[in-house]
Length: 474
Image 1 (cartoon, rainbow, N blue to C red):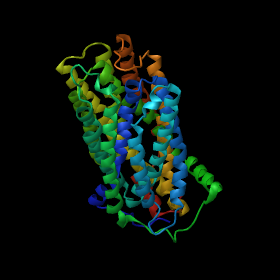
Image 2: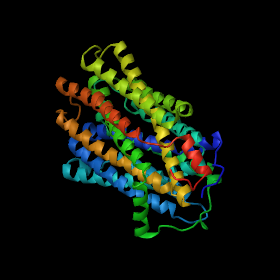
Image 3: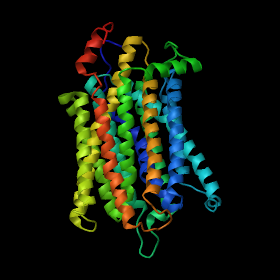
Image 4: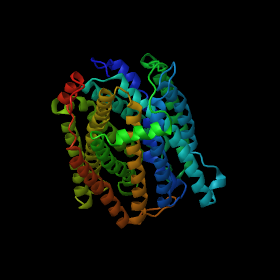
């Protein structure tokens, strides 16, 4: 059974834990923002092939997440079930991330060899990410069990994630992709991506060390913890229990849908910067940085919203904000009310784009804290802590949706007539279609997700009642 008094953490302890989000932010946000550009504009790869490579590796990542959650939950040792994987998995993650941007010249002249090489490196990166991120997410579930405190913890993690994103991928345009008169467009030069990857890898390594050692007081010696579900049979039993959890299925469905929409927008918006708005490096950094500021502000307010409107109401607020901002952008850009090349256009675009990510910033911490609530409900009823398995299965969902979204991104780029190659100018009709898929499809999917989450029944009173009377039925 869980303790009668929920575990809590100080704000400093939450910050120490949340520093572990820095490598996740630098690596995954850089991947989301630059990988497709790197493949299509610097390496000259067909966008459909680029989408397939990233989709397959993301699907592999998704499949291995539940396995890693099961392994972590069943690890028994002096240093607990999470920290060894966070430390050693993080080191491997940093190394493979640096390798991601390095493509030997021998592979560039043969498209088949290039695709094979990129697929292998992607799978290596995704495997290392699984080893790191699943135990890291589970540790967050364990260090704070207070209902609104969970949202605060996840909000702090999102804020630090976005600060890393602002200082990293957003500023990368100004630091690593400076334009030079008479030279090729900066996004077509592969060495720019490699320099960025090495710099972010070094920062990620430092924060992995910091998080591991600053949270060592949260290590729970697991040598005497009860053993459960060992072996393949135990793994599948755990998965069946989680997937059939009637609370989890609503979060499963919601997360799957909303993340597809978000990945589509985040991937396509980079092409909007480049091929429609035609931003320079500084403008890209400001506008892209504005999206992180928006998400960071949303995360900062998510705990307050959750206290005022509970968690489901907060999701409605965040989702509704993102949908409205996307619809406004589509209306203004597709109708030609605002056009590129004007300062007003840049300002309006930046503000509405930031508002879209503000809404996502409100939602994300709440969804993560809801998952921790569901895991605790299972522990109350079964007496077994499966935070690793629950976080892993949800991670599986997010990556499965990301994999599907990457396939959609590649297919959409090919479908709208995107012309791959180095320093290619896209035709006007292609750019118009790009605007449509960016600012219309994403909000439509998000609206569908909100219809699903309305069936989720847990709130603060429900969870407190269950803690006080574990034998009660719900």
